[in-house]
Amino acid sequence: MKNATTAFFNRQLVSGESSTWTSSGYIYFGGDPPADNSTASLTVTEGGKVTAVSGVYLLHGATLSGNGTIEGTVNNNGGTVAPGTSPGVLSVIGNYNQNTAGVLNMEIGGPTLGLQYDQLSVTGAATSTAR
Image (cartoon, rainbow, N blue to C red):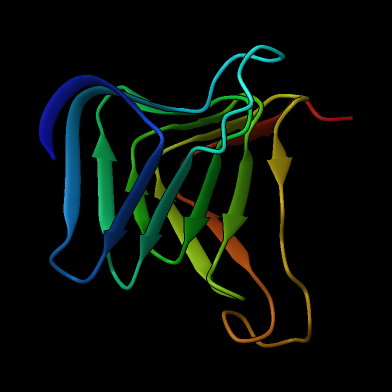
């Protein structure tokens, strides 16, 4: 999908070196609790890249996972960010914001990056209001 201004999606897979998804606006996944029991997901793997000029928003029930790249701000407002594909590195070229309802789920199984533990790599600011 290319050049969407604002997009709401349930499940999306972006996989492979030449796989890209570009939005000139926002990309939203998930819904508002408690009415929406969404299981929306965005998986970016194998060199895939998602670009969202105005940001990616994870709402209630949404999951962002994989070992690809997100270009733009990621706002975790009630979803789950799970870097890697058991395990691996998810890269954010931009900022990462997480509120108290958001979850960052990391696997830790040893000292080797990408093979034994997950990493969320953020080039901009990473902020959290979690307690």
